[in-house]
Structure formats: C-alpha cells, structure tokens
Length: 335
Ligand code: UFG
Image 1 (cartoon, rainbow, N blue to C red):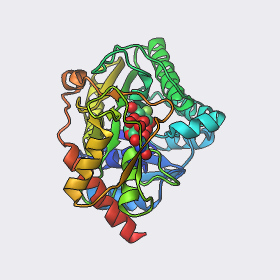
Image 2 (cartoon, rainbow, N blue to C red):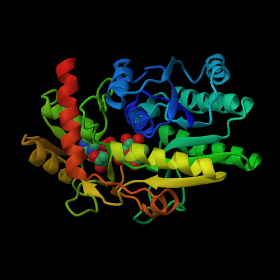
Image 3 (tube, protein in one colour):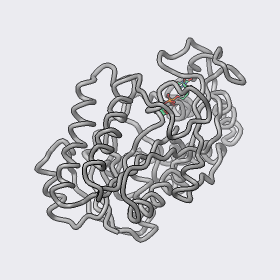
Image 4 (cartoon, protein in one colour):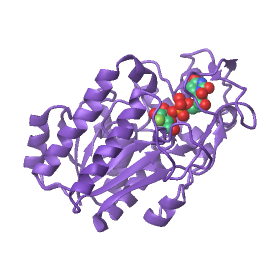
C-alpha cells in the first residue's frame, strides 16, 4: 500500500516508518524538522534497508500539501505531525491551534481533493482527561485539560464529522498511552529539542549527567507508592499497532477509536528503579510537589486493540528502560 506519513522523523513516526517498510509498504513521507533531525531519515533507511520518498514540508502550507498529493498515488495517511508539549501549549495556545488544527485541515483538504479517504490519526490518552475509572475504555467520557489535549480532542471530532459526512471515509483514532523505549539498533530514539518534560527523557538526562536528579512530582497520590502511575508502552510495539491499523482501515469504513497501551500501570518510582536495575546506573531523585494538571493513575483497557486489530504489546518495562538507554548512549556518542 502507498502510505503518506506526516511527521515521519519524529519519535513515533520514525519507528512506524521502519515497521511499515519491513512489512513491504511503499512510503511517502514529510516533516518540517521542527522537533527532529534530518539524520533520522538515513537511520530509517539503514535499519530497514529500504528507500522512500521524502518531502521537507510543513502541513500548514496548502501548496506543499497539494504538491505531495498531486505527485503521488496515496492510499492512506498516517498523521503524526503536531506539537505535543503539554506545558508549552498553555503558554502558546494559538501556535498549537494553528499548527495542529489548521495544519490537519490542510492535509484533510488535500486528501479530499485527491479522493484519499483513509486516515490513521495519532491521538492520545490525554483525551480521557481525568478518567472516572480504571482501566480506561474507549467509550469513556472525553475531555481535555490543556490546549494540547484540546487539539487532540478537536481533531478526533473533526475526523469523526468528516467520516459521518461521507461513508467512504475510514478513520482510525489511535489513543497512545505513554510511549517510551527506542529501536534496538540504537539508531532511533526520542530526542526532544530543548529541556524535556516527560519522565523517560528526564531519566536519560540524569543518566548522562545533564541534570543532577529527577524531580518526582508528588508522592501523595492514591497509588501503591504514592507516585503517579502510567501505562508505559514500548515505541516498537506502538509502531506495530499502526501496521495492524493499516490492515483494518483497508478493509473497513467509518470511525473507530482504539487504545494503544499495555494495560499495565507502573509508578514513577517503578520506572526509575527498573531503569537503575537493568542499566546498572544510579538515578538520584527528590520528591517535589505535584505537577499541576497531573492525574493519579492512567492505564488502558487494551482489549479493543486485541479484538479489532489483533494487536497486543509484547515488550515489557525492562525492554523499555534498556532500549531507551542504549539508543540514547549511541545517539549521544555520535553528536
Ligand atoms: N514525572 C515526574 N517527574 C518528571 C516528569 C514526570 O515525576 O520530571 C511524572 C509525572 O508526574 C507523571 C509521570 O511521571 O506521573 C509521567 O509523566 P510524563 O510527563 O512522562 O507523561 P504524562 O502522563 O504526563 O503525559 C504523557 C504525554 C502526553 C499525553 C499523556 C497521555 O506527555 O502528551 O501522556 O496519557 F497526553
């Protein structure tokens, strides 16, 4: 199948490119490198041993989008491109709405103009807001607590409206839980520009002495050890979820939302302790006040992914910690 990948050089996009190329799909990809590096393209090609067409393009540029669709026969789009930092989104909300919402509309208009009606969208467990119960099922009430989350929620609604307006559309909303880990080759990893916000990139910064210690945001949550619990999922497992989603959207129409998580929650201290154990390295931490907006616990009911996509996660928290550290070591050595 000919698949357009938006945001192809990002963390999840790059791992998904490898998974799709390994399955024999033909890729057309674009990115504007706003939070990634051109070298990622060579790494995707090196791991997969396959080539693909790439455009340095911005989704908010309708002329660039039209060019990509008019120069290629595209069967399906996997849409990763977007700003994703929760804290930043509260500081510069307009940039988030412009980039994520307007940019996606530019892609959708180009798709419509060229009769491309299959899309897999990178959504997030953030659309569940503060869930009423655990594990989280896809039919739970949706809400957002920050502008980033609202862009995900709005885009889910826009895509659902689009598929309601034309029964030929096939829309899959993949709600990721907490993606971590990296490719085993050490050639791909999460490499955010600037100071990272998420736990695993921060653990890596401590491991490489860029930061002295982890600030654990709260130990008074209603969880086993008092620290926040999340459903960490290995990015390679997540990438294979997209391979399965491609099979699904090829054979069905309408909209489906599917959780991609392991179904198991780990606390902040679980992640730090496992990282220390598997990598034989000390990660100092201090307990600090809660981070505003954080919830106690969040983990998926992943049964719909199994039923609809025949997908389950295979890699555990030890693989996530080991692969993240190994890849960060090899990427940092090259820089
Ligand atoms: N945490 C710390 N110290 C840190 C960073 C994080 O204690 O320095 C804690 C948080 O309080 C939380 C856990 O580690 O309990 C995970 O925090 P992350 O920032 O890594 O991830 P979040 O669960 O807050 O958010 C992530 C993504 C969002 C996405 C959400 C979906 O960043 O984009 O998962 O569940 F929406």
